[in-house]
Amino acid sequence: MSIFSFINPLHFSPQKKFWKWFVKHRKVLFEFEKDRENIFDNLAAEMNKVHPALTFEFGPILKNRAREFVISAGGIKEVFPFVQALYDAAPNLPEWSFIKFRPRRKFINDIKFDRILIKVSDVYYRIFKDQDKVGLIMFIEGCNNANKDIYRNIGYLFLDDALGEYDVEMKVGFIEIESKESKYFGEAQPLLNLAQHFDEYYEL
View 1 (cartoon, one colour):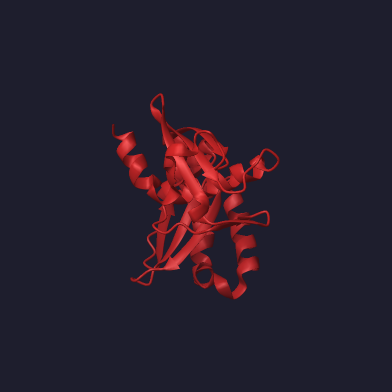
View 2 (spheres, rainbow, N blue to C red; view 1 turned 90 degrees about the vertical axis):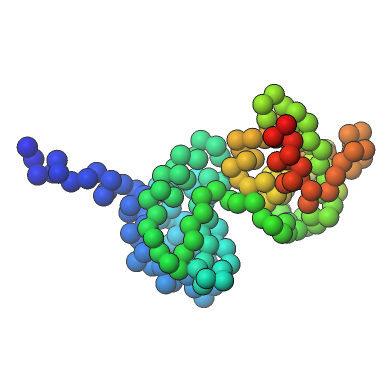
């Protein structure tokens, strides 16, 4: 039997190689603000070796002095297993808090996309039943037929913040983007109510 038969193939997995690189550069990554563009480029290049659709987010430094590092599939459900595998292989580093999938945000920020700034206070929604999932119509100030593709991207960004990446892909069915002039707007609620409403509706 070859001596190579005794070597664990996971030692050479893309996930293990990524975390080996991460550990080596963890101090620089923790202080990414000092050289954001260069550090992000290098980090993205290493993460793309695991899967080209994987992306990341850095969170704030928490009270325990650890910094959040979010592993995201970029909203692509087929990439979820790669997020899970990378998360499962993560080392135990006291100064880091690793999170799989973009989480819900307690405070939803305004979003600027393609030079368009949308305030969260200008975003509303309605919930519908969509078989075993939840369907959503989002109403965004300024949306029209000419710019609906852009506003659809903005809507997904707001949804990820409101519900988290996993729930958006796994529990949400249809998503429609409309203006406030839509005939369906009558019973709409502010986006800030969505998380609680969504959880209550999904448990019905």
